[in-house]
Amino acid sequence: MSAAASIVPVVMVGTEETRLIVVRGNSASGKSSIAAGLRERFGRNLALIGQDNLRRVVLRERDRPGAANIGLIGMTARYALDAGFHTVVEGILYADHYAAMLEDLVRDHRGTSRCMARWLNAWAADFARRTPDCLHTATLHPEPDVETYVREAVEAGARVFKAHVQVGDYDPADGQLQRAWGLLAEAGIPVVVHCGSGPAPGKHTGPEPIARVLARHPRLRLIVAHMGMAEYAEFLDLAERYAEVRLDTTMAFTDFTEGFMPFPRPDLPRLADLGDRILLGSDFPNIPYSYLHQLHALERLGLGQEWLRAVCHDNAANLFGL
Image (cartoon, helix red, strand yellow):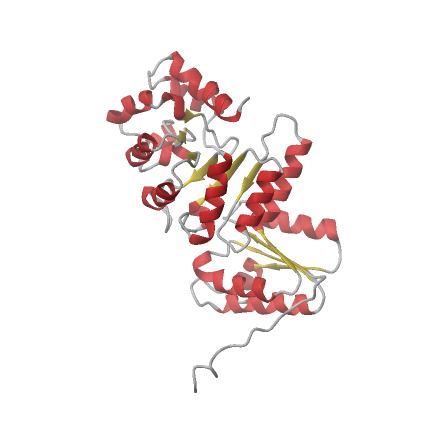
């Protein structure tokens, strides 16, 4: 068989009127609730294709590269779109396993396709409009239209972005993100990034991938979540190297975290020196201790009341102009 004969032809699906929405996220992140909410609001003529239903219930299959459920999800979505149904595909959908199938599906769909990041940005913008004292947030993911929807979010008034390298399972230095990072650096909009290897490492976590982003965009206002646990010292290095890098205290220094990823005490003087670039974080209410314990954990570091007030209030107030 010739190489030309082995090429699979592109088969377009759906119509210009059909809508395709891909909702991805980690376990217990709310993606199934979002998908169910879309169906409840829209009513009939919307197909809901759940990864867990096809993989675990229909096929009773393990989630692995090349598994049969990958093709079945794609085929089911294509059938629904061709039948005129708006279609929601939801699941964890790890990029290493499902990216090619999803990219082909989005590419081949004749109508409008939206992945999770763009939909979340629209939801967050609406929530900010309805909620006093809430900062307008947004997110991003390496995909073909990322620059477009990041620009739209910035123009709509987004004040802070959030990226989760572990959950999103992507390289922050991915080429598709470079223009988006540049746009955010130029706009001076802070980006909270979970890029450390705690509490569990991912394929692209650790200081090296995000260091490559900073090398290309040294003015990017990056806030490293969780103090960069467990690579605390290495992320402090980045903060010392780049003037716009900050760190947040989410879960750090608490009894819970100190039990398995303790902060190195020799680095406490570096925290004091970076006192204007450490910000309070909490992850409240999804924490295994009281909110007050996080504050007590900061106080017992012994870095002084001025440092504590800056971390708990002044630094964020100055960053966001509050």
